Length: 284
Image (cartoon, rainbow, N blue to C red; front, side):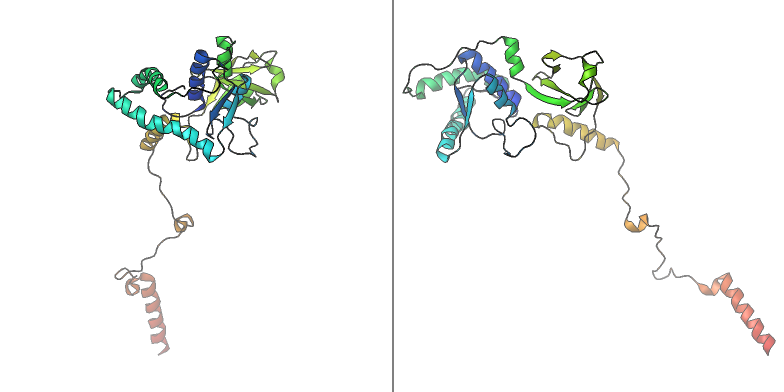
């Protein structure tokens, strides 16, 4: 069992837990999990990707199978451990006076050891089926990252997480227009762009800082995005909302009592009335 306190569930946090598990126990034959979106593609007819998640792709490269609980009985086996973590672990943390994530992660190894000593069940087969992890540290880091393909445009640019990446013009990159390069995004924020295994120099050409009302934001970046939106809203003046009548040039006329036009004092009306009276007198 591998436990970690993290701020949110994501591929990177599962990569971190998986790396600690592999370095301690080696590579298992398979992992048994629920149907979380990190472990399996929820949409069977999804057109993007290669039919597997980033976590599934990493396990495939490590030659490890992943089995997702399908029946209610299998789901119950997964949730049984969750009830333990949500009940017993919470009480243990409270009794130990732990109230920070860092202290909690330092406490977890002793908790796991005590839990296994008290509640572990002897398996039917006693032999350890974990395999030694014969990988260099750099190779394991390359596997436990987010890898995607990006289409290179005519200006040697491509989009990546609302950023515009421009490849440096070299003899290799000149022939990449209209082809796909592979991006390696690591948990520490580093980005590596490769073509057939070779790293390509690049620069961030145009970083998009604009956040729209329909932007999809990851949970780990939500706080920063909300702070940025609040700052923009404070700087902008409230927009004037025009009605359809205002847009069409409609001018409201005076209709209320006391606002009607006094035709008796209108110069045009007076002139017409005097002219009519003069004609009448002349006819007489």
